[in-house]
Amino acid sequence: RRSPVDRSNAVNDKKWTNMYAQLKEYYDEHGTSYVARAHPTDHAMKNLYNWVEYQRKKYKKGKLEEDRISQLEKLDFSFDQLDERWENWFAQLVEFKKEHNHCNVPTRYRTPKGNSQLGRWVSNQRKHFREDKLSKEQLKRFQELGLDFEDIKVKNHRIWMEM
Image (cartoon, rainbow, N blue to C red; front, side, top):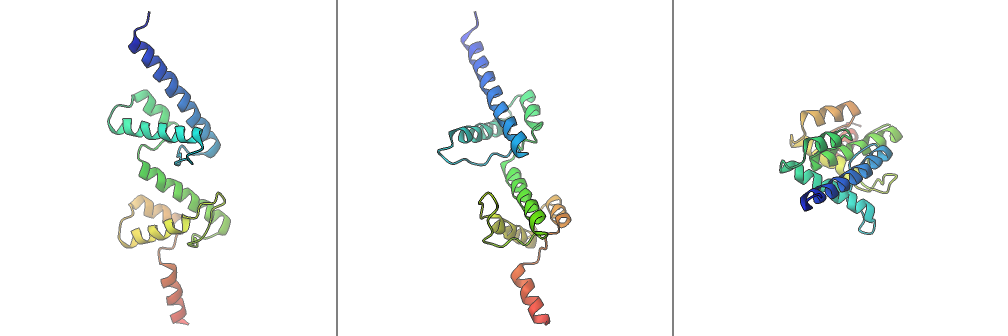
């Protein structure tokens, strides 16, 4: 006979394996393990989001097992949500550039998925640049992508004044 603790561990292992399989399926479909906060009526995505957040909390407390950490890392899992959000936005900027051949995202631009915040994010990154708040790695990646850090309004004014 197994003890109640053994049965509890077995249930937790099965649940973890099931949720990991869902995250892997998500990763295979979307190319990222970044799971955005879901609409309250989308229970499957809400559960996956909550599970992902719980893994981050356990990791930060040093309570996530090494084998689980390595499994999550296979899916490029970020244990830092802020880094993950930044990567998600950057990926959207890369897609914008592929489509438009520049990185000057209009403030009111809507992504194909309906997100209207990309222009604001790019504007905030320019502000972070002026305030010297971007990491060297972020700055390098923006430069490689071709992001112009000069504020568009200021640039347009300067061009107008030079005419």
